[in-house]
Image (tube, rainbow, N blue to C red; front, side):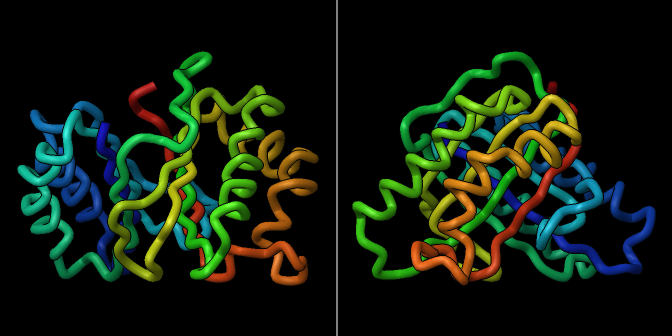
Length: 209
């Protein structure tokens, strides 16, 4: 599988035109992508944009066939900034949903250049340990980025489906496995920190659930 994520920031003047833009984005990938999720982001995102786009293709060539159409929509003057990533497969595999999740969440992050491979491996293992403890996480995939755009040269995409918004805000973000094992990689006051740049934490209703 080949995945594409775009976090689209819109001008405050977008108003009702945002709905038209989302319709155009869906149409740009329709008939080519096997998954087309285009939804407004929910309150609480961090650098997550106003519209979240997640496209899944069978092959990279399928994305190549419609990328210009998606880019043309995103060239609209109402779009002020886009963060995004393109990636293939997952680190340690992809878990099929335990059951459908009503909220889709994605995190774009950049591991600091020069970080030892063994350290990155431990970081990835800590992220992938989380689903074993958090029942509200219904599916998940950690991937290394092939191409990133926007605010940083992203290195990883960490994405999940959750039962609902409370399942993301509560059992996930507040779980001991998160703040005791994972947060240290992001905390600038911790000697283990390897994610120093801004992150993009974005989520939306999973209309495909």
